[in-house]
Image (cartoon, rainbow, N blue to C red):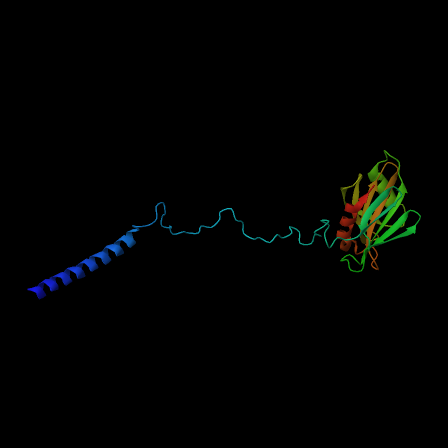
Length: 217
């Protein structure tokens, strides 16, 4: 009987220990016994910053511009020539020479696509109110031994004035001439191909247009 009582007491002690251990584990799991005011730390999710900007490398809108001055890195040096009431601005590498008291010749540099062309500019007296078509006809046909045949003509505009582009045949050679007029002068602009007389004038059309855009009267 005594032995049976000891066995029952031991069994109750085991049950009590197991129950106490289980209660402790449950309390720890539920946070029981945590200091007052303390809260379990929530899990933190890192969100991207909506205001952050990506690192973007800036590029120049004009890759040929100088960063400091804004001047194109490949800018061509220019020269200004003026005489007899007109002026023009052309690349510094172009050659401008005076061939007579009222005539100059302009030659592009050797690297230009118009290197075989030249333009001569001559100045003549002109009276305001003079009939322009009549003046041009008389000027071109001043030498009666020269055969002149007009094919077409058109008005042109330049800085500071207007003029006429004359296209025709002179002694059977295709010729292009431009005449500009101011209050007291007329200017003849004659393109030609070096070594080919006037027979290659059409090859110099681009240079002529460039020159007309550069001249001021």
